[in-house]
Amino acid sequence: IMLDKKHPNEMLVGLNIRDRRLFDQYRVDLSTGAVVLDTENPGDVLGWVTDPDFQIRGAVATNNEDGSTILRVRDSRKAAWRDLLTWPFGDQGGPVGFTSDGKALYVETTMGADTNRLVKVDAASGKELATLASDPRCDTGRILVQEDTMTVQAVEFEYMKPEWKVLDSSIQADFDALEKVRPGVFNLLGRDRADRKWVVAYLVEDGPTAYYLYDRGSRKADFLFVNRPEMEKYTFAKREGVVIKSRDGLDLVAYLTLPVGAEPKNLPLVLNVHGGPWARDSWGYDPEAQWFANRGYACLQVNFRASSGFGKKFLNAGNAEWGTGKMQDDLTDAVKWAVSRGYADPKKVCIFGGSYGGYAALAGLAFTPEIFSCGVDVVGPSNLKTLMESIPPYWAPLKKQFTLRIGLVESDEAFNKKISPLFHADKIRVPLIIAQGAHDPRVNISESDRMAQALRDRKIPVTYVVYTDEGHGFARPENRLDFYGRVDEFLAKNLGGRAEPWKQVEGSSAEVR
Image 1 (spheres, rainbow, N blue to C red):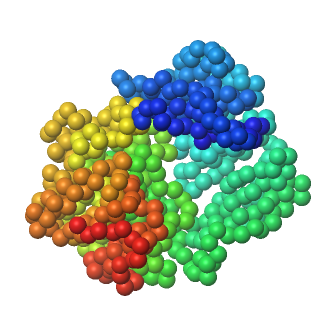
Image 2: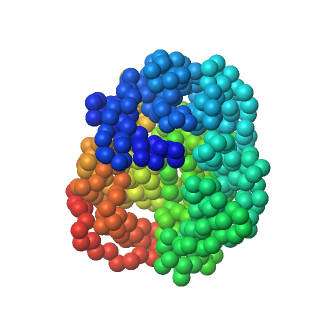
Image 3: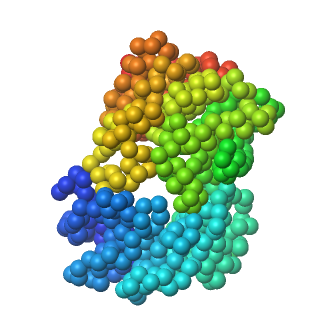
């Protein structure tokens, strides 16, 4: 969905009605409800960009022959599309938006650098006009644009913790004032039409998010509410940012959460692996990390190679390094770091994760069985060949990029069997939970069905839970409570922490298969 301040009665919506593989753009009249096809997807476009008149004049496409990304533009709605910029596979980039006169674009790009920079380019030639913001440690994050003037006012960078870089001097005093309101990292969520009042959220690592109404005239912030007031009576754990060296010298940014009041020594450890894998763990309140800490476990979340946000070299270092490769080595190295520093008991380590994190959990148990005491796999693929063969239709334009990132699992049978945990089920020695949504469009339920059966055939203790009304992850509160309750009990049994007595949650669709 795309909205525009100057066109409050319209919105643009991407729908794949015509072709399940492609999202065309429809213009919706919010006054009448009329829906009209605005721009048809030619077959390779993943995203669109509007100009100051709320007309689609930019498109981000992929080349399924070589994995490159293309920025196309047109001079008007009736003009022909033309390629403006191309990022070869291995580089990253994409548009932020047009300038107020429509003659230039703000673009994020790694071309000519390792990390994503924010630059201004000419919309006619693609020539780079200026570099607006960059950080050698990490990519650009959130970008604050003044909607009336289309001026980039600030850019956020997050290496360990988010930091704002102010580009527009007219808001420097406002940001200085907001920094003093309360501890935490603030984020501007909205403005009034005159840009005199802002809604601001303050994020912290150990409590709820607080919301304020900030007046630019008085530079005063009035407290509005916190999103979860019931949390304020509890003490939560701190998430310490750390840098772990991989065995080949990469810096792995990670977050360590320790139980409140416990001696940080020889604790049972949960290695919580993020999904994606082209995503990252970030600073801030993390409910799973807090849950683990509350139960008496240390929680370690590591940005292994292939995680996004740390530049293209770090991202590309994970290409074809799944399973038995260096991505998994980074996770092993993180556990060894926690043990060597005295935080973790080497005999009580669980690997936990969803999606790619679920795959990593299976891989960890299969390829480094001596490291882990138990595991939890949530909607994780077990056979990468069948994963690639069953990707949802709307991911078709990304197929080449997936192949280059994961490796030739469809055409190289030996390679696929080497890195797919399904073919190494006999190496798993410890108990695990597999949790799966029956209607998962990304990781088909057959991935978990086959893994669970392979484990049972080898008499390996596995609890396989299917949520019959869920997809790629669990959305319904009843199912989330059921899942976390089962894992709570499982971890207490295998790691020795605290647990709330588990019982079947009424309304949950859980089926133990």
